Image (spheres, rainbow, N blue to C red):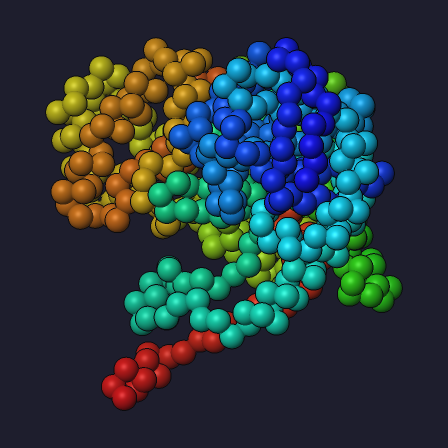
Length: 581
């Protein structure tokens, strides 16, 4: 028991009794991580607005924010399913970064005091923790990125051994555990509902939508660093989160942004390769060709040919992946400029972040378009591993194809009408509604047009999803962006009407399991508003975004030593014989 620690705050010194039940993670030169404490029920963990910047949390929510001491950087991942964390008796605190003097901040009690306590006291107690092994199962600590280390490679190098051991333990302890039954419907229905792929960077819940390393899109918007206060998250922050599982600091995001800019130079042969294609070729054809032309610089291919040990595969994969992520915006922007703007290239602006630079190279320098591109790239980056592009990238990479080859294959899957091409179809369909019925279309007219589309054997693009069973959170955050920046835009208002009209019709007809709008239902209208009106190009934007998710997982595929993917296939005759037995 630790009794009467010195407390500083508006309420003066008070006794805090720490129950048995806390543990720590090691503190070294590069990482400071979270401590979890159990407080006696006398303290109500109603978190106050630290420095007037942290959102209040009610105990009834059973959610516990974690704070940094930087007044403009409130880390707020929502912690759930943590054993023994009760809303009236426990609280989670976080050690701050070194540059803030290693202080920890936490708020307790209804009097809303803020207490400061130096890390040195906790360090002195480390031996006590080691001597109490029974405590290790009483709580689960939450690891949050609070290090001042700006080296992403070093961060991964530290994390990988731990995750390798974790995978080994899962194999040894649970290797024979069944995850479900496979039915004939699953085999014939595109393998929907099968659990058959490890994908660490994100997880898709049918009701909640996508979670990036456990964080929902609204949570990412709150905790990931932004270019300006209250702005959209920087894609570099999501890349850091996907790779490390930790929320980065603004300094780390800025360092990563600088690193990506340093890798963004495109060799001349890439432009020449694209120029060999007709200018009328589909933008995705030109984009994929450019990515393939980049492959000649692959560090993984060079290392493999030199006989690199498999335990080191992840390192040249990391180099390739960061270079690929850095270069695809410039390649994509060139395709756009070549097709629609006379071929004049716009260079990288060294003062801009990833999303803003992409908008800049396309030829859009308005601050709202830059914000939209940050949001767009972030929310389109990853959607777990079962979708066509992500699965294709993983499948091809499992053969030890380098990131360029793997991502080019993924792009070819993304180009399909049932996957990434859907976003261009949405805008074209919406414009066809306007062309036939006018911008001031009534609800009844819209219903008639929807039914006309369905009766002609077509689908209403932008509605339904293979996994989701509710409105796509990626749709909702784009809707919120539109309400904030373009509430009176006629096409946005039409999209809003479709949200009210289409789901009831699809539900009544039984056309889809999920009648609600997906991410594609909104993105085209936003892009169109800011001047990017060329719908055929939209899938390229999707492809640039998806590089972040696919490459992040590919690095972990190599680090974890995941094997060649080789599922079993059968014939209809085999199915008939099997089912008749």
